Image (cartoon, rainbow, N blue to C red; front, side, top):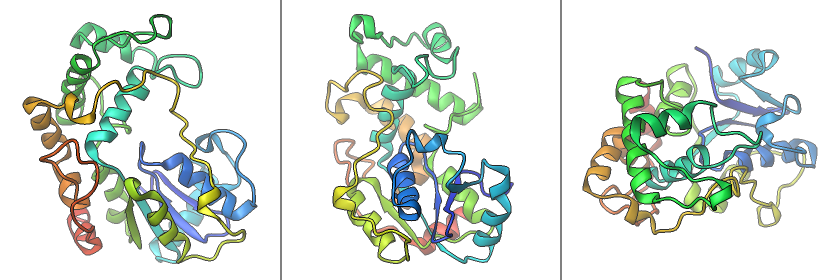
Length: 272
């Protein structure tokens, strides 16, 4: 299986396990900048050189050798499951993607037909009932994760623990897992532990939110999207994420963690 979703600087200063919807564009650009003294011109996900990625065949031997020997500082970044799936809904389901089309071609028409979801369009300024549509999307997300129907789960709403576990199961060890919600502190804790070719001043780094502006703005507070049934579905899908990364399941309105991440617990639970 190897190390899917793993990125590494060319200098091998640091290894990162990508988790979608968890500041991965900004993290990738910081890694690129730390090696080259400039940002990648475009979406870092499109970069085919200047950084090792598992998706680039030539990079796989270098990543495998590094990770299996625990040679470099390795980290990942997580996010509150409530805000992460909301972000996935507004970006991937409601939004128009960078290529000018809907995400995954026939996905949105399938959701409209099978789940009665509305997504609006730029022409009507995305005028639809966001709460009702989101709750129907949640049913779809649960179906994909629980039964892999009507399709396999998408990386943007499959559980973070699933992404993070592949690294551990195949022999990797995390030096650090930090929260998107305190991004600067977390990213600084990584930079403090590695040697970079070019110094990185986090205060001056822009946020590379590649999904912003493609879809509707969220009109309501986070907690308004989650009734009792929605919370039940969220727990069914993301129970392990809440437990391992110390987020507050009981209060969707609290995006901040309520405990410290225990790396030993993460490695023990995800290495099974």
